[in-house]
Image (cartoon, rainbow, N blue to C red; front, side):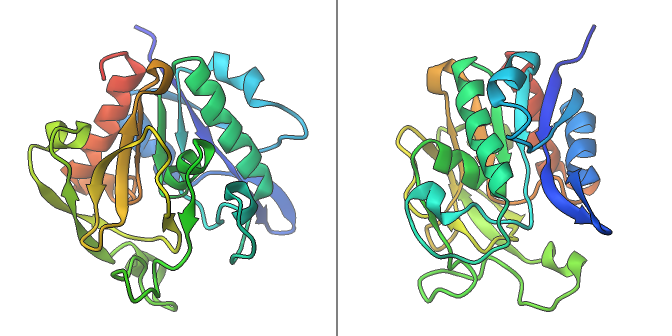
Length: 244
């Protein structure tokens, strides 16, 4: 049987001296392995294509994490710290809308989790590593790259949700690599997990019948050694097959 085709969004990055469309291999490998799907990279080039052209050709979309932040203007605020990727913002937010219009799955990780919330009318907060109100959601500056993903905290899983059914437990530990987080949760999104400080760490919805599930943590990191992370991608595979 032909496997579903997952779109995986790319970022605009500089490789050497040239611009490139890039997505870290770990996102694609984790999705293809544990969701059992084929994958196509979706370039963030809104001057050359639109989400309307792409969405009909995909069975689902995965919005990945990224070093860049969602631009504050996207949720009605000013300022904020970069780096930004305005072209990715344009494609990602419009892909959310068009995939929902087509009743197709929308999944997000880290930046993707934030993008979906913004696309649906929510806002972000930008102090998750320094606020007196919150636990630290990012490792201290200057640590090695691998050490960033070793920074972890627990999340409480909401009763009656998709994650509660999939994990069959009330809490679990997740990695935490984000400076931005949910400010106002978009209308229609149901909380699936929260950090000990109350920050939303996962949500789900079914707008227009489209399965939607996003997490703030990084299940694509070390997936081969983490059954909980594999479960997230199993859910992605089920959604693309109409089983979620």
